[in-house]
Structure formats: structure tokens, C-alpha cells
Amino acid sequence: MALLSLAVLSFCFLVLVVEPHRAHGSSRGSYGAADLSVPPLVGLCASSVIVHGYKCQEFEVKTEDGYVLSMQRIPEGRVGGGGKNKQPVLLQHGVLVDGMTWLLNSPDESLAFILADSGFDVWIANTRGTRFSRRHATLDPAKPAYWGWSWDELVAYDLPATFDFVYGQTGQQKLHYVGHSMGTLAALASFSEGKLVDKLRSAALLSPVAYLSHMTTEIGLLAAKAFVGEITTLMGVAEFNPKGKPVANFLKSLCSNPGVDCYDLLTSFTGKNCCLNGSTVDLFLKNEPQSTATKNMVHLAQTVRDGIVARYDYGNADFNVEHYGQNKPPIYNLSNIPHNLPLFISYGGQDALSDVRDVGNLLDSLKFHEGDKLTVQFIKDYAHADFVMGVSAKEIVYNAIIAFFGRH
Image (cartoon, rainbow, N blue to C red; front, side):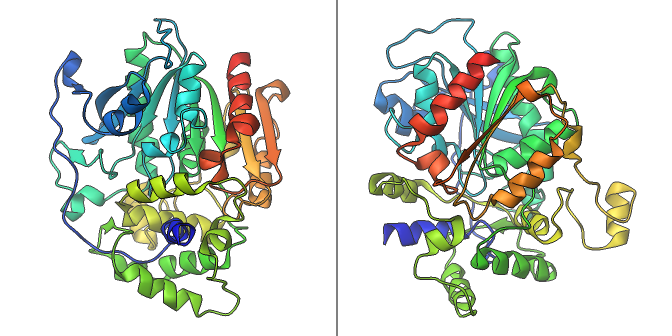
């Protein structure tokens, strides 16, 4: 049942169901340098880091458009070894989850702890709208205006704010970046516009999501098509709440379609994950999923439908002209990513979301990348969740990332 429940939550990646509800973000006071540091016994530090014997700091980062984002810092490993010249690493999660993504397994199996124990200064980002990043200078998350964003705004505001903050806090050291799923999409779009690269040492992209037209999951494709087809009915429901009761009803309607196997939703949606354990899944279910903007879900569905990486399509030429000065939304040209930017790309042969053909399209966009700056890892047995929750990820993926960082 735990795996089935996880599958239901995973399915919400592209599900149509939305339900408005009261805001549940915590009130977070601030103190310390620049009024951006908050007490350490708040949020992920207390619940998931300090309990394992690591030092942890909580911070709040303000974006240019007024959102207040939670960040956690693990400055050193469990046995100490802190220093001013440690290389910073920023971890960015995917959609409908938060920074807990990097802390689900034991310290010996979770990337955040492994990096800290390997001598890195680890920073964990939490996207706007998730449980500890639900504040704004003027907007209320219980009101639609707060949710008027898609992953375009993560590119334009969230990533620059977190990069600038880490860069400033660490003495203007360039940082390494690790993204999973939508955390790779926002990064690739940013890099293609020349953003962040002046503060970036290298980037590791796990289960890269850019092109999505070859997803192999029938249930995901049906959900994406439904989402795009029902844009007009979603107006006025700004917060996408995957915990709402309508999920079951919508799943039932999708499962009635021919060719959709709902007996094992986790496998049918994400691909056959090889290496998850039950305790990790249970911890995931206690902490996830998180809310996002309905507009963000529509934007992701557009990416599936259109097969391109582009800005949000307002569905009307006049609206697009109003926002972009042209009939169609501008494309993020991934071939514009600087050819000398060190990139590590790891993808799986069983991943139904980051399909090997779509990753092939991404790699084709990077065909002019300098050979010694692009490292590609293909793991035949891995699916989408294995990269962040797999018990074998340290030996197969994380050690390779650390070696890559060491070269750059």
C-alpha cells in the first residue's frame, strides 16, 4: 500500500485535480545577519538534519518579486571539518516536493549528508509554495495572486535569488549545482539565457527533464492532455493541492481508459524503480507532497504536449503578445548553454518521465559542448525516483558526482 500511495503522489506530477484550501505555511521570525537567518530549531534542520548529528542553519531568502524562500545549510560533515574555503553545493528538488528530497534515506545514503561528509558546504533550496516557502512581502498564499507563477518564475527569480544568497554567504565562491527532475528544467532554461553561469562552477542534472514528448507512461500522457485541454476550467483555482479528495475520483476516471494499468501506479507512472526501500517510502509519505501553482502544472503539461522548452503559453495570441511581444511564447534555446560549462547528466533506462529519447534530444542540443566539459552517465536499471531515493545511488551516482565536482 505504501508504494501504491507513493504512486498516487507521484502521479500528481501531471494530474488535473486541484482544490483550494487554507494556507498552512508556518510563521517564521528572523534575526541575525541581514535579517535573513532564522532559529535553527525550525523546519528541516530540526526534523531531518540535527537529529543525525550534523550542524544545520536555517535561512530565508527574498526574491525580487517578493517571495520568501526557506534554505538550509549543512556547513560540515558529521565529524566536523568546517572551513572558509569549502566548495558550496546547491541542491534543487523537483515539483510537488521540497528539500526533504535530499534527506529521505540514512545519512550514508542521502546526497546532502554524503556531500557534507565529503567536505562540501551544502545548501538546500525549497521552491516557492512548498511548506516552508509560503511567505511573501505583500501576498497571502490563501489568495490566488500568490500563485500566479509557473517554472518561468523559478528561472527568473527563485534560482537567481538562491544563487546570489549562497554566493554572498560563502565569500563569493562559485558553486556546484545539483538538480533533480524539474530542478534540472529550471537550471537548463536559466543556463540557456546566460543566467547564473558567472556564479557556477559546475552542474549535475539527475533525471533531466527538458523535452517530455516521449514519456512512456500512458497515465501521465492522459493526465497531461487533460490538463492542457481543461485550462479554461482551471482559472480561479490558483493553488494546486495534490492532497485534495478529488484525486481519487480523477484517478478512477483515468484508470478506466484502455491500456492504462493502475495495478502498480508507481511503475506505470515513473518507470520500474529498482532500488527503493520501504522505510524511505514511508518517510516520503509523511512529508510529501507539497503544493505548487496550477499555472506551473499547466506549463509542465504544455511541455509534454508541445515537445519544446518554451515559456508559458497563455493560450491566446493576444495574451502572448501582451506578455512577450509575439504570438507564441519564446523558446528556451538549450543550444545556447555555454559550451564550456561543466555538466554531469545522469539518466535511467527505466525512467518513464525522463525517457531516453527525450534525454537524447537534450544531448543533441548539447552536441557542440566541449568534450571534457560534458559527462554523461546512463544507468540501465534506474527509474525516476532511484536517483534521489535509491539505496544504491551512493555507489552508482553520488560517488560519480563527487568525482565530477573534484575535476571542476
